[in-house]
Length: 215
Image (tube, rainbow, N blue to C red):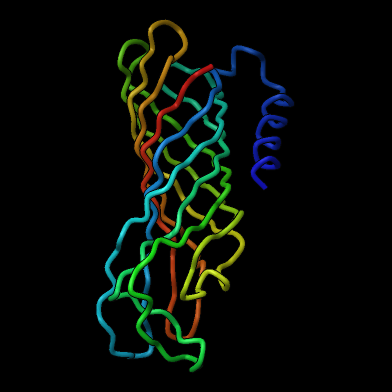
């Protein structure tokens, strides 16, 4: 899945009919991915509050930036992110023995979800050289590529894809015409529910801290 997503991005960039000056640059990105899930309990079941606990993993990918305008550009990217959730004693999960019922979850653990995502970001910059601040926003689609330890077996019922948006802000270090490195922070909430049951729904969210190296 990861190789297919990266190949798709590179082929798209290579086949773009734009002239060479329309491509601002390309490179690789990597950093920390802090993921958490928004769990909503329905049906009037009494249960303890569910804390939003981060599960930290990593993210790595590639990007191509088009439309080399003074303050505006378009970024296409594909990345592999190790996400998941951190389980606490307060968390609840749907009981596999009683349909629609809730029971206390495991005492602890950090089960893992692996996603490959494709994204398009509209990027606005405040400057052209030196330390250039910027902001970006755009849609993305995530594909579930793998999963790790999950004592509650909730991940077995997760959807294979997820749709959301990415909001980013960062600083480019631009010594001359092309950036050298960027430091970026992101927030990526999902629109769709990755898990849905009569008493429990789950949405993915993540916060990423990335370093982008321009090649």
